[in-house]
Image (cartoon, rainbow, N blue to C red):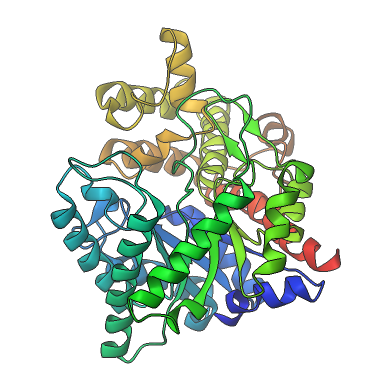
Length: 424
């Protein structure tokens, strides 16, 4: 199934581009929706974990790379998905979780993390050493980043060889968008300058050759660049193909490469298809999926308020507000404004910082109560249409199925867009 990644550049050059969504989430409902869609299609599904989310120390999910593979594997088994359909990717693998430490300490931890990812079966590795560590500039020069990426790549290669695993494919690049969206209002986003992208590719190619990894560079399938797409707390910067045309044309000189597009959440289907067509066929999406999950949960919260005596008025939303205000660490640096603005953003922001709270005991208990009171309750079609009109109601549909269907609507948009590129 990994050939779907290695064939991206050739397909573009042949005038038959296709793409693949990259599912960047550890939420079980999101994963179930993605895997259920893969079970129906029989095709590949690319699921990625990030360095802060999953690492050798557990990350914020509490999972190591091996734990994450087992977690996904269990859901896949329940949904009837074959293991060889799943491509596991590691995102932003580098010193980022330990950047407050010295470079020596941070890079040693990064090496251990990459070893854990590769040993667990992650076959798509995004090496990201673009951030400075303690005592270093916030952003490093391309040469330093490339040298560190090459050193981390060598760790991945040794690990795969030692474990008898297929050699990974790699994603490189220094112009990496902020994970989870911008932390301020955006009016526009400039695409990466073509000369800067060209220089980044050249510097990495040279660094890999210097490290004795020239042959490995042939398995670098994409570079991360900024095609001009991003989202903030309450707005989305849409893809504008003419503004990125010069950047896209750079690929004409790099026949083995494509670009990877981060922060494609909330783009329209037409914009996603245009990204695939223009050379950005790996479409990263994460917050947009958990946003759809939260949107459906809050709709069901209102449904329960209407249909279930004694449930209360928006009990789930109230429980989440209490949790968010008592433990503000995951949102307080990202949202701005007066008390009303902050309250609105805590729940409804495109940045979806609320996604970090769903695995907390208080949130799990509130969601379980909602699912429990709706168990066996027939939701009249007009009521569902009132609160969640985008999900087509089906006879006998359970609340959990409604949540999966809400996420699947977003996944369907990506599936159509990646196929739309093939149709031209």
